[in-house]
Length: 208
Image (cartoon, rainbow, N blue to C red; front, top):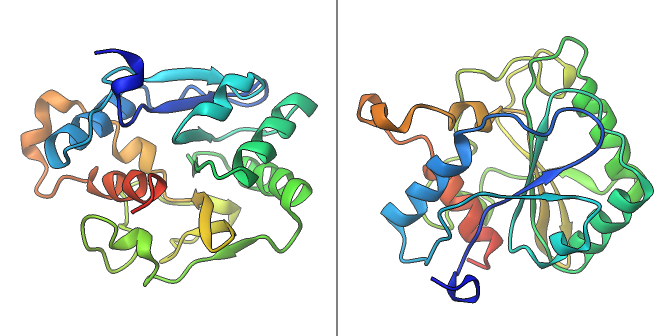
């Protein structure tokens, strides 16, 4: 299938600092769920693009994760802000395996630098992202969410940056990437497919 005929492709953002290459199987599991549950024409291959590369500005959805220091270069910062302000969507997932919340503290400092100190806010559990495809009462919990955002608490909400009434940066401390990084061949052991919330996030990102 030609690239232009896809409705969706998954883009992971590579950045120079920290550890962007976490949860290796997660994208393929999410992409499989999109094929299973939706009618989207999905590129089955994850695309890894440097945040400093202007090609990332073309992506319908971007994923950025890690659990170490985030310190964007000027080119990375420029593209991130341009992408978000231009209508792009970034899902940021704090892998929260660190001790002192380094990913959260450094990432939030970067977001404040680009969008202002009050731009990142808690979103209500009635937000449309929780009903864009499947119905959720709020963000699903995971088995790994401890020390997210560096405070040793399990939160019942996500944070986001909204621009013109739409979430453009969705920020999780729940380590969804690890939760969705299961061995797909053994998916049958899951009582409820935990990638369904990923379907919601992507559908919202695409305009649902």
